[in-house]
Image (tube, rainbow, N blue to C red):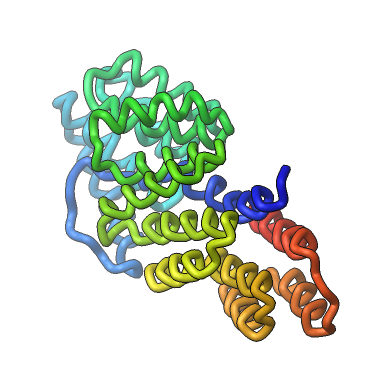
Length: 307
């Protein structure tokens, strides 16, 4: 692999690990947002209320909705096994509705059991009559996470035709192009996603800017890359953004800014202190680091991050 491409993949690794399989457990009913401190307590109270109501419900639709609502709440508080049991109970009552399949497949995807997630999606696609878009999106994300990019790309393209303003789909198609080293197409997709991300998707919007920057690093367009990483940091401060800036300033032989960004990265991830210290000490002692040496150390740090 070319050095420039390797440079890109060091930073792309985190992106594919975290963001390609993306989504939050969504409630079917819209509720008023709660502050973080009160959310879990409110969810526990709601679960207890549903427990008591299930003793009185006789209508099958009410029972079904109670199971799925309780499953959603249990997943939010990490009572996963009980939540999955509620999903299975709902499916046994009515296998034609998408929501329990969605919750189960998303749970397994988030826990990196992509094969199980896909099998649940496929079952849902067989029986469900609506919301197939949501299920297909999870399947495509799982395929991408397994590096089955061509299969994922085919689904993403189908989904994009249905909802051309879905920012996540544009984002993930950008990933496909990025892996295929079709960098111009990737940048177009990331820019498209930026247009449609709302204020509730700042982490992904920052990711789009940072992935554009990493492509620009490959192309040695350092000034543009710096600008995009700085924009990403204004949206959401992240260790990867500072590492990207550190590598750029290292390439530009700006030791001062290299050290500043390395220190800022360390503030984000103090548990990776040894890796940062190794790089900083070598630079401070005027030991010239070949780019591959810098990348090797950073890559080891990123691998540790994903354990």
